[in-house]
Image (tube, rainbow, N blue to C red; front, side):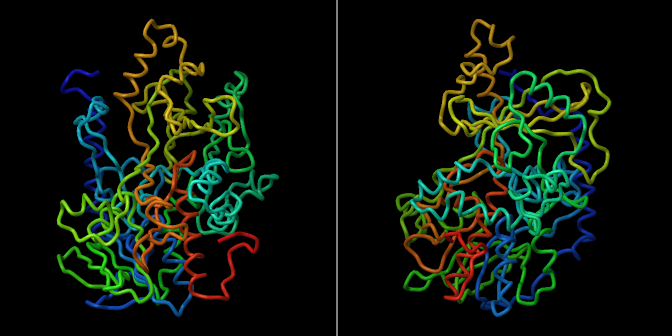
Length: 524
């Protein structure tokens, strides 16, 4: 444990970052990049739309694009934040987005598991900006293992969510811009005409690390998003054309002048409105000017406010654990386990000293990811053929303030944290220690932090059915990370975009008997 009053975040770089964030906030007030995104909608109290989407984040932006493809539908998108600004669009400025005006800045309560963190609390970044967390995350693109989705299908008892029936939506959303993969047999595992631009790490610096891993018996894979889901490989990013591929930039910028899409920014939904038959008919919303609007939906209200805000809005609207709602004097419409089942990948930072290399210096081009990066998907249980542990590795110079290895441990099978020692994965100097297991237990408990892949708080099968309709009420869906029935073996961005693409097809099929799915052989 660190002595009281000391923590890992007290570095000279922190005040500098704060000053840069303030300068960028002033720059953002000029709205120099607002022309890239849909303009603020002119909305009146009691205006009616076919669909009201609450949350213009990762999933909400995708839905807004796909539903407004039908020009006979009027779609309203509500977003609590504003347009993305410079530090969002430039991938190299990713470290400036957290703890800024772009972030909801949620923190955990002080616990025994956060003693080494600033203020002894954990920071939980969540995007408060058009594009949501896709606008502030680290742009890592990984779908996870096919077995993750087959497990979803088993959990929710619906084959529509297995790998075979979700894969077409990954392809539909993706626009691969890596020439090496494009000209390889792995091309068929990727989409090339989608909205979300995806590239791969191209630095030669990581080659020697991958060679070293292979020489030590570690598996290297050409493309972890292809047919093989295990091994070490160059990192894939949602970066293309020199810009971060937020879902706002990828899905809303191309349609910013679409007349049947209305985007109301700096506006937060505070309550879902129901009629006497428990049909969702609209929302109450509060603007930045403290003005309250009632905005009506003639077809559906779709909540896509994220794993924290979606359950909050549902509970404020009477959907949640009955006992909890009654304590708050909220009229109960549907007794559901809303807010339970929060899942995330824990991670632990490890720094490993290597040889000096000028080539390992951080990228100076702000259009690139800051550091050369490769990732590994490994099974701690060596008898299985799918990963349960991920490591993300940054190559940096030895005098850098940044860590040289970023180790993300997904204990999805609820193993004891010291199981890693039994797998023979620990550094020798730790393994030889008399109380190695206790040392690692303390280290992990003290330094573990969330990886910001929040899921499950309105899980499919528990809160929604497999068509993402909220149980016990009508004309209300949840389409965001909160609806994922479980974590996948990687960053959840790709899974959330897939979910939104598939949800759009589900909604369109409910609209029309003549609906054609994205792929003729899939079960929507």
